[in-house]
Image 1 (tube, rainbow, N blue to C red):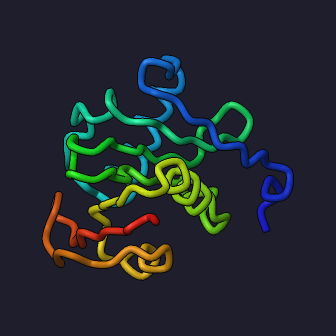
Image 2 (cartoon, rainbow, N blue to C red; image 1 turned 180 degrees about the vertical axis):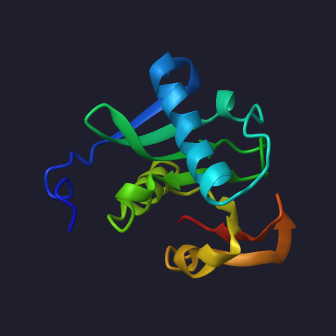
Length: 153
């Protein structure tokens, strides 16, 4: 167990794009870049103009964002709500931080279905939440993905 595991505040912060501070936005982009580009070697354009319309969910350790996802409203990415850019700092994995963020975002839009385009290696993880494969596997950004939907009733 990591020394910060038991003492870390697991408060979930939620903000619209226009509520994010410059520092928060920088940390979000940095975390996404570290994981998706540097660790997973995905060459993609992260700035897809969906951030401005999304709600941003974050967990911090002190003043550092260590887990993040964005909830994209219906009609922006999919006809349904979408969970996107789910990411955790490698030093904080196995603490179920992404799971906390996913549960919280799903709770916030209860009664509305949610669609994701999840990396194939996370298929069983998302199925654990009740997501069901509706498309795939297919390649997205040179990574195998599945499109999955949750009724979120």
